[in-house]
Length: 124
Image 1 (spheres, helix red, strand yellow):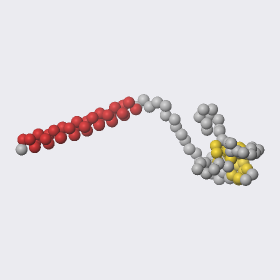
Image 2 (image 1 turned 180 degrees about the horizontal axis):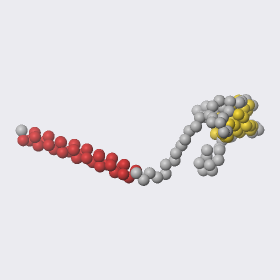
Image 3 (image 1 turned 45 degrees about the vertical axis):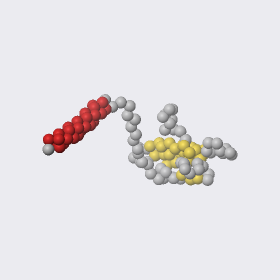
């Protein structure tokens, strides 16, 4: 999804470092039964192609074959991913403050032990 417009956007297929052969846009239309439904394909020539071709569109069931001319796509399974965009964490200052105080405590302990060791050497 393109975050700017929140609409599906095509992407080069296959992804770099391979040379893109087409621009591919895939939309999943879920069904009532989990991991089933329809897949909408829109296949167009890659951006900057010397010979622009016709766009191919189609709607297939999960597991069915979509013929895009030189390429064929078969969506065999559906996997779900969830993303989360964290904009504000109210506990972050508390966590960072406790980490800072812990680090400060470790530094003070180190300095105290170094001074204590130096004092023992001077007394001996």
